Length: 167
View 1 (cartoon, rainbow, N blue to C red):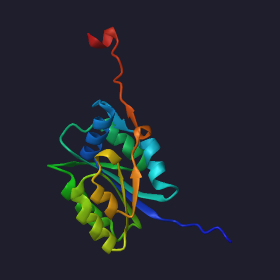
View 2: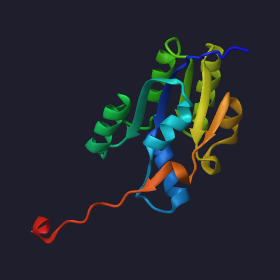
View 3: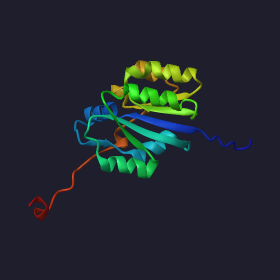
View 4: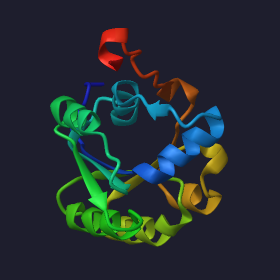
């Protein structure tokens, strides 16, 4: 049999607050961060990345983080007024006709109706989340579940300032 090249276009939409809370809970430290350089290739599994959008509530979004997402994945960080649920859902609905697969990085059961809607539009929907904190109803509704494990994050250690920098 001949090898068939399947070229799927994938959008990854991340509910930053949900994923951050989940890994902080599991790692028992607030300084744990997703290792996108490890996680993104694992989620894509040789499929093409159409876009990566990181939705985050609050003003404390690191510009270094935003720059890295853009440089490495042409990703964007989207600040949200309140929760990411509505902005992420709107963007997913807008992207439905432009991609084959949407990966939602969140374990929030609020996304069950969105997953159902997107599947009805003919989009493959995958969930990437920490299994322990992800809603079973969401996992069951998705076409596929990617478990985010401790290998997919790291503990951020802020660089120590020299005596000259402190003064």
